[in-house]
Image (cartoon, rainbow, N blue to C red; front, side, top):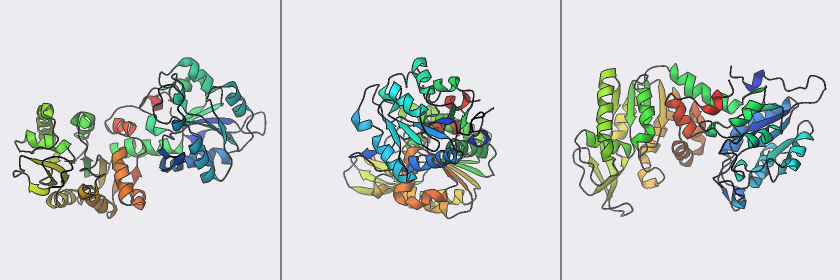
Length: 399
């Protein structure tokens, strides 16, 4: 049975001191000039950390950053993260330059109640991504309770989120992971109808399992982004010089057939905004489905598509969104995505958004809007796996 952090006793039975809690967090955040420039994931980890401190425990935090491939890379050090965490918590943070050194383990064992110890980047050791048993056993020496609150890595079998769990009798999930599972699993499986999935991105392969899973539970599936081009081509439409997966046309046709059989409405864009010639040409144009010029690159949905999509969303009680509807990082082609954001936050409904690009698009548009969604996932791959109906190894190992 998966234990929630609220069900765990953090006090030592034979003393008045608290136990040491080893927490896997996800501090894979952007850093520039040794300063954290986006603390979203750090902020999301605070409720679990504060709860453990309030219970009188000692806290040891471990995370990865980037892909140093088992080698020390000062640009990927967690020192800036420790500084940001100290700022947010308004307290000093102990830091060790090697996550499994004798000195680091001694620091953890000598923590006082209410103190925090942050370990250096786990991936400075190749044993982390290889789920090495020795590396896992060394990490386990840092605490007597293990909590996984790193949803963003839950789809992987690494030492810090999978192998280490075998060394703890008391283990569970933190508040961040608990909320992710509640929304991405429970609330989707028992969604209030009508349920609409919005899916974007460029490649069908990465979202195929997601679409197939929602065929059984969704009333509507709205497809946007470059992925829509392949579906339009499958219908026999010209998509100009747009990004398209010609080898996936048969897959798109099969999705249409399954959708028709199961009564799931598949809605595609009906007009587009883009450029003539090549990306960055700045020769902007607009066109409707059926009249797309041969040299046009579709980079966003048009006003008629926005109106069509919003009409579907207006009849929905639950919306799940994964993938932007255009090249949202370019302000010129962000209107489609931003218009859908505006519409969703203006309605009283359950709205679940996942995928790093989608969450980033919302925050880049209007930072405060992310709070208006019922749930914004902190995981990319993990979110997609869960919404696709798959299990997450780092969660299953805790059961």
